[in-house]
Image (cartoon, rainbow, N blue to C red; front, side, top):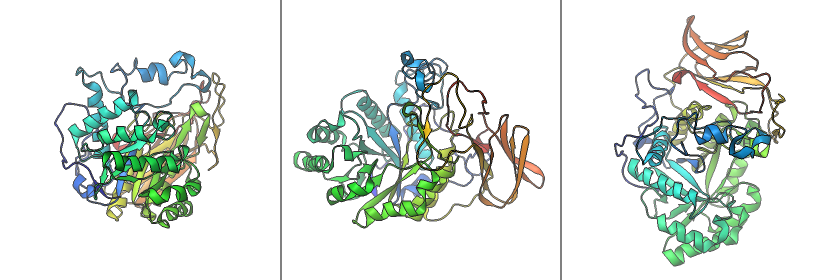
Length: 480
């Protein structure tokens, strides 16, 4: 899905905090390979976006992290007057905290930080979930848009109306008028031929005729040609024939278990788009655990993330949507967070480079990635009544996974409590799974008997939890 945004590849030089600078050739580089320059990655016709969910900014209130809205309302079971008590709180993770910012424009500075984080990882932009057209979420979108203009107008923002929103679905005319008002601003994503890309998620709720009317109104009333890329949440095969005649591309929201992201299954979906002459956007996912919905999918540690990237590469998808950048309510986030420790984003930098360049990057630094839950799957929390249950996909497992990006051969040791597991490992990407247990969890890489990379989990197993937490937490040896 080739296209164009703004022309700048620079920055405004503001003082907002940002993700660590990647200084290739020094020990400070957190990645196991040398990330190509932004201009090299952007030259590829293959695009990589992360789905941005506006309800969860870096900060709601600019308060200290121990006292802010995340700590007191969303992560606490008693938050928001106890409405989340039954399922143990709304969230299990949060964005990486930062100190309060004295600048009154702090929220815009936070959005600039997120743009920099995504840009430094090699992403082309965000698909921005639009949940309303004149309410608080629209205001956050406009703030993100202005922040992107300040940091890098060439970082693309894809207009992504959320079909599940009652406000979005009020009328095609209203949506067209709103999107036309922002559609010519520099960061808003267009194809190379000038068409405005609109990529609604869950468009099946309004139906094909509703969206056909929207496309027609954009042209008739505003002179804007739309390249529609519907992203179906359910029943891809049942919707493609209805939407294909007036769509530029087709996409799906994604699945959350390695077995449901088999190459065969992904190929079937991709062929469904290409057989109709449409571009195809593949979904790359990490995991999904939704306390509010009492549901989770077994991701197998980092296995699901790597399976979806491998599928996107093998199927030569026209574009990738990473689902999601920051939907903490469904535990699908790629953004740097307390629980993620940059790991899904760092690993994605490797695979997106492979995907964009067509060549597997050479591993030049040893990095170990660690994935584990903080409790056993069948643990019975003492203060929670509504428990999540496994959804169709892989069977739940109590395991620790260590993924090594190894520049050469070595020995990987994994420590779980009093037990130690040892494996000989060749160079390349290597995965090891061992049983989950109580006590400290860590891993190390030894070369010629010397430990050269070490990683420890900040999330030990709680054998008697008060609330359920089925999140996989991640750690990286290069960021500790």
